[in-house]
Image (tube, rainbow, N blue to C red; front, side):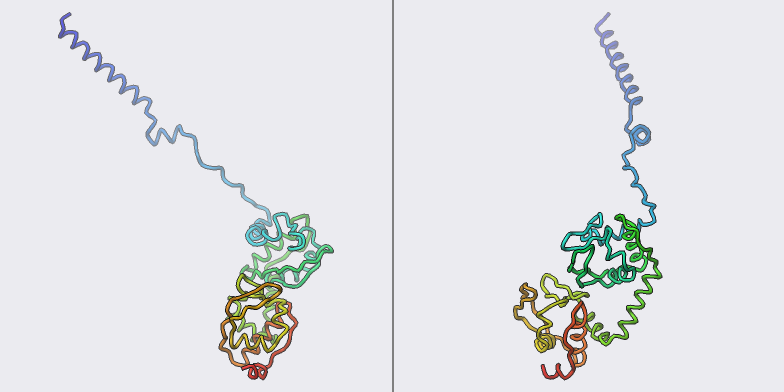
Length: 271
């Protein structure tokens, strides 16, 4: 065999091997989308189980709003937040339970023989169906066997509260408070990081003239309320004598307070 024949045969062999390699690669190519979809295992997580219990909606509200204080099992925090599980206080009065959800409470209560004095914030942002749902969840969870609450029950309580407020001697003062004071002192008169509490405040309730003066003239003095110091500025409020008296009377007769009554003459004298 000549040298040229050897070169020719070698080229044929190389060509054949190259063709075989292409064929094998094509048969085993799994990079196309269709092949991947057919052979690759699904990587989707399993769907979460659907909660079809009658109290699922209420459980959602509870986990969003109530769980931090009252705990996942409804046992609360001893000495701070009362239990909902097997609570004699809760299970004794459906209307009171509705009121405490929508209005909150700053009154001391006794639950299962133990006293609690922590603030229950108002959940006024909840709609009637949400209030009913979360109460039904609580009334039928944590080994409770309690009431059933309807949207109509919640609406009835709201309407009665609204009617009582409109007929209250402090209704005008509440309107002013909501417009001018609630952004700092909160809707229920509770303390914030920089603003002193109005609910149960011995500082507020001990001096009528000072309260009037601080409202109409403002103050930047450091004050101590319930043992805590506050240094924030209280801006002067441009109010008529009538409005100033109204808002102070609302505060001194709300949030669990039982304080003095302010007249227009009192405000005029303080000016």
